[in-house]
Image (tube, rainbow, N blue to C red; front, side):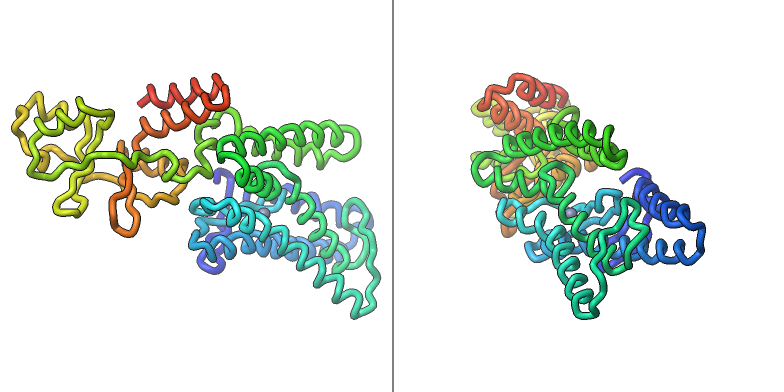
Length: 373
Ligand SMILES: [Zn+2]
């Protein structure tokens, strides 16, 4: 993420801090100093800030460790004013797993709040309501309220909050992922408008949150509609499963016949069941012009290709294809070739998904994505 600094590594996961998190910290520090201009207050404030760091990181570890149980690694954790983001390598294919991963973060805050309340009851400490700057009250009590607030905020059903993902997972149990993602993003933007409006009159901090929610929801729905529509959709939904393969000894003539007979442009090349390369349409045309139709596939194919798993997410896979400048993803399951995925497939997939629900604009985006290639 831009404007982030790496602050450490925990359980094998890099932890970054986003510049805007500093704004929250500065706001807390200043609001501790201002009322009485006392150093003791600032030390109290710093303790709270360190605790806040720890709480947010624990929240994200809740997501990361739950995802790890489903075999999903976390690339990094970034601390943001609204609680932080754990960037998972992919989202679980199963909405039930996505639901558990999304709920795990707020669950950590609920557990922490419960534990703090218990400690306060056992030590007969007073449960105080903090003032708006968290400057009054005792530390344990403030920490408990911070956890309550973090759990509540994160359960707001709007991207990029956990609640947005919870909502999408719940919707995805009833409808397809694209539809569920867009519905959840729509709810998020509507809520951001409400926050922004209410915040203008009551609390400037709400406007700040509204901005984040709006940007998060927008990222899921508008300009990067294609990418976000693909997020959460597994490769298995868009890949071709009915495909032909070539052998290294085949001639290009045979490949042409396959291209003309069907819709397939790129062919996996298998040598006795072992994947050795890809014959792309561009390479096929180039070789035909230069060397003629009797050239062997082995001389024409490229050995540069990407492989993936049916459960990999489309947006991540596309990023990988772009990085290696490959056209085709060969989809392997337990070492066996089960499908192929090209940019064309993804464009077509989006087009049909959109057309199915009568969304002409999204269908054009899918078309553009297809033509752009
Ligand atoms: Zn979270």
